[in-house]
Length: 203
Image (cartoon, rainbow, N blue to C red; front, side):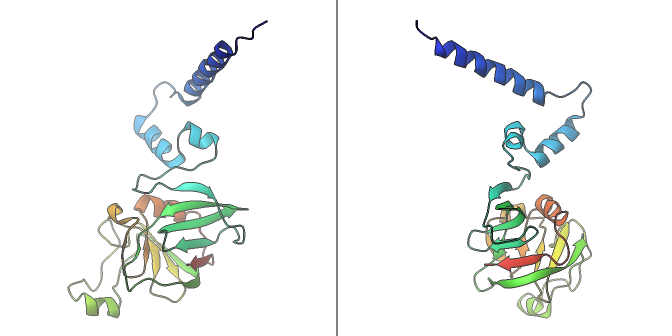
């Protein structure tokens, strides 16, 4: 007796497709803007099904990835060559973000801790930067035009920060004076998951 495998497979596919459509269908009177925002922040059906965080609207979407198990949860690992930031979330797992890094002559490596957090931080360019760029303002209050963006994480006693940016097109490039920039959307996502005292490894 011949077993008709193809119709069975096709029928199973149709059933699964119907299930996916039902699982992701919007309820009556749904708010389209809210739904779109939730979709961007939490990923689509298959991303949620397989545990992949694909939120973020920047040029380098964030991802949940496998990662080196030597780092404890809560550790930030920055790969300046890859231009990615990893927040270790569990045993062998991390959230990966696209970042902008220091341009040639301004890259660095080392270990620090997050010593401060600020929402919509003010910006006071350090003397070293003002000597290179005397045209810069001496002080800029926090806001959408501020180059530190929506959030900032301060690293030890250094002048460097992990911060947001109002120039998302610079993510994945080497343009800064040593700080690490994310899109404002991604830096808010990261900020909410990082505590003061978190280890930071720059490599």
